[in-house]
Length: 255
Ligand code: NAD
Image (cartoon, rainbow, N blue to C red; front, side, top):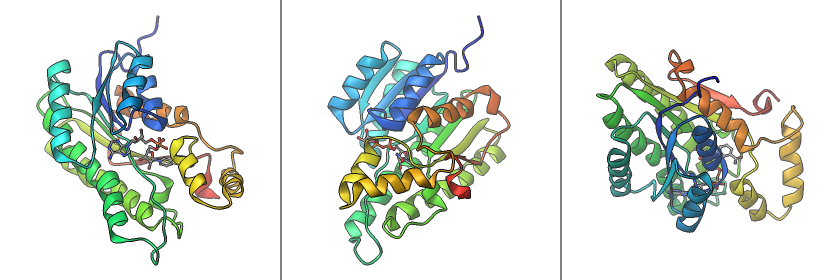
C-alpha cells in the first residue's frame, strides 16, 4: 500500500468550518494528517469536526484577534507537541468601490484577511523553527493581481497576503528554519463566500454566469481543486518550493 502524502503531520487550518478551509482539512486527513480546524462560526466548526472524525478537532477562533491565536497555538502544542503545517484560509469579501467603502469596512477586511496571515505566520514560525521546520500556506486570490472596481479592499488585502508570503519565505529561507511559505491564488470557487457575493448584488444570476465565462476551462472551481494544491505544498514533494504564489484558476488569469 502506498504511503499517504501527509502521514503523521500535524496541521492547523483556519476558516475550516466550510468552503476551501473545510475542503483542505478533509483532504489533509485523508492523506494521514491530524488537523485542528479553527473558525469564528462555532456551530459550523463543531459540526465540521464531527463529520471529519477523530483526527480533527475544532477550536473557536477569530483570526483577527492576537489573543485568540495564542489560544490556538497553545491547543496545538498541548495536543500535537508541535506543528508541521499552518494554512491561513479564513477570509471575507466585503464589497465596495473606492467612493463607497467606509473606513471600518476597509479595516475589517485588512484585519481578517491580512493581519490574520501575519499572526498565523508569526506563531507558526515560533512553533516550527526549532522542531524540524514545516510548511505555511496563505490563501490569497487571483484578486491579488486582477483588480475589480467593487473589490477595492479585497484586492488590496490579497495583494498584501501575496507579498507578505514572499517576505516571510525569504526570512525563513535565509534563517535556515526549514519552513516553506507559499500562497495559493484560487479563481472563483463554489463556496458560501461566492454565494454571499452573488446575494449582495441585484443581478446575481448574471454575475454567476459571467464568473463561469471568465474561466476558459468552462467551469468555476471546487474546494477540492484548491485542496489538491495545498496537499502538494504541505508535503515533502514541495521541499524546494518556497516564496511562490500558485494560481489555481482554470486559466482565468490568462483570459
Ligand atoms: P467561506 O466564506 O465559504 O468560508 C470562510 C470561513 O472563514 C467561514 O467558515 C467563516 O466563518 C470563516 N471566517 C470568517 N471570518 C473569520 C474570522 N474573523 N475568524 C475566523 N474565521 C473566520 O469562504 P471561502 O470561499 O472558503 O474562502 C476561503 C478563503 O479563500 C478566503 O481567504 C477567500 O478570500 C479565499 N478565496 C476564495 C475564493 C472563492 O471564490 N470562494 C476565491 C479566491 C480566494
